[in-house]
Image (tube, rainbow, N blue to C red):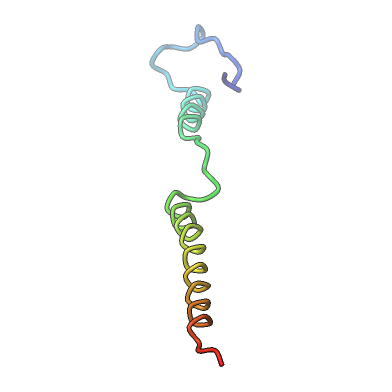
Length: 76
């Protein structure tokens, strides 16, 4: 689907370049270059994912270390 109006090329010689031809070519190239950017780049998503996975393990390890220290105190 093109947003440019159809222009009959009967009035123009085959080898002439008009501004409309250049506009059409530029528009087609621009359509080919369009792509959806994700909200973040893949590297950033990977770093975020690793951080989200590692954080619970770190918190669990800290909690476990605190409980071990608390449980290993001699009771009077």
